[in-house]
Length: 434
Image (cartoon, rainbow, N blue to C red; front, side, top):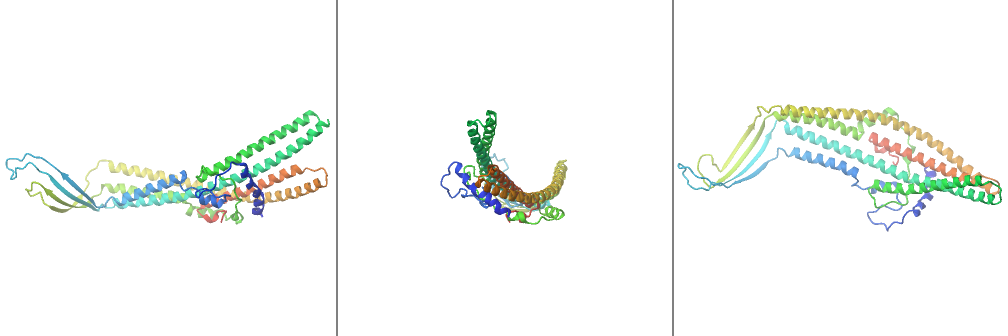
């Protein structure tokens, strides 16, 4: 089975962590050692910048929703007005102190649809941002898996290049002995020396990449100071599932893709904002209450308590309402264009991912056959070597390492394709981990 072959290939590579800088004792907030793919997905930082940006947009939408819901709330205010006056000759009270205190309350009773449309637009926008956050989390999951696989592939690449360098070194020593016996020329020896140095350089680059990929994984996980050393080979049972037909996948994606759903809600919210702007020219009915205290109490307009209704009817506002409405209409047109573009892109992405899974499934079978062939070839070369018959044992070992690398790479690429399909269709069940 591919998973068994993968575990066999990657199992010894956990020792590669010994080549990396020593880690301090593990603390509660550090990544587990050794690290599994499930651990990486679970312990990824919830404050990673990509998530924080999406969460900030969601909180902004929540604040806008709360603001829209509170526009017609009861308003209560206290007005304190100390005043000095010069009373006229006819005033019954000749004091100069005309200070006053007013307690006022105001509540919008009805605004003919304005607040309703504003609240609906804010609520729709919030639903869209929540779906966008779901899409961001799915993208993060795919990114973490890709980073995890890159570390494992870097380890396998190093194992291959280390094997190749060892073979070159053994062959170089053999030719040096023959050169000492004057059995080969100087140019033949230098050619082998050149091959060895190239293999040595390739090994160094591969070793450095193992460190770079670990650092990259730590950054992806949001733990820049906690670089993982040992990683375990993942189980990918979802790679063995049957691939649904293309039309079924497209219909599922059209209904469930979180980004597409978020863009549809954006178009809906734009329409609700248009309705809210049109309602700006409609009347507003308010209830008002006022309790007052005056230092100089005289006249009929200084009542301690007053209640009333106010109907505010806009008669003319210039072109402000029409301009604001036109602006929101342009915003809806732009949102509709974004939605159409996303639908086109999604249809193409579904097709390419579907074809990618087909290709990798076939390549997986090829890699299995190739790995089996290399296993048998290595066994034969080892037997001939033990019989002291001329053999290419070193080259056979290198080729087997290459076969293991091809098997793992194909398995990981197939897993990423399935995870991408899960993201595009909005169906977590398509994940290779399930």
